[in-house]
Length: 229
Image (cartoon, rainbow, N blue to C red; front, top):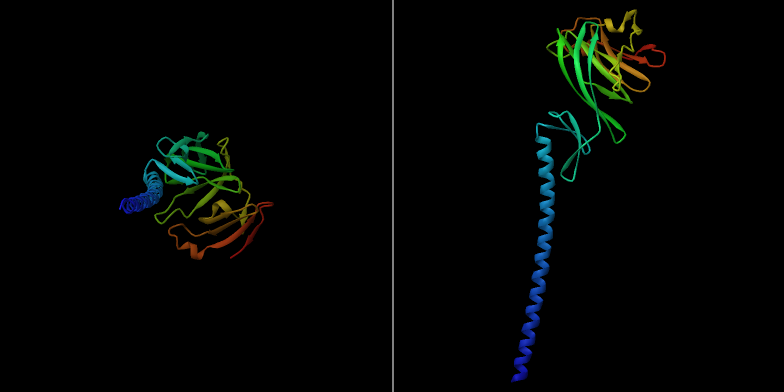
């Protein structure tokens, strides 16, 4: 009798131990799954919070720009770390276009990024954000922008380090007319060797001129011009 009771106790103990081990395994698995979900949720919430924050502008990768502080930041490990940057303010005067521009730029992962603020623009003129293409910076100026958009945009080559700018297309003529004198200048595309631009001598009053303009290619080696379309 004692032997049977002892066997029952052993069997019950084994079953109890098995249940304890099984419960621990299931519980551990659930905890890992919950932790994983929490990490993914936290990551999503953090990113969503940052991007939706009006102070921060997402730039690239882990690079952000604080528009209030005017400072580039790298975001890693839930922490913002300032990125080394340069700040400058320049006064631009070109062909009746005048305005002040404050800009900040940094070099990050072998690329250059720039953010700027325009202020105190004179008259009916417009300055466009700096564009960086093929390691060169350009700022587009516009005279008498229309309600339908600035259809007369003209690029100036811009040196971010010094704040100096120049009309690198000053000598270019199309059909005997200086490029800057065209009423419609738009659809600019600049690469290492060529510039493509749509032009028209008609007055700038609407973007329908896109359909009536002619597209030319300017060779950056000798500034020769060829009609493309």
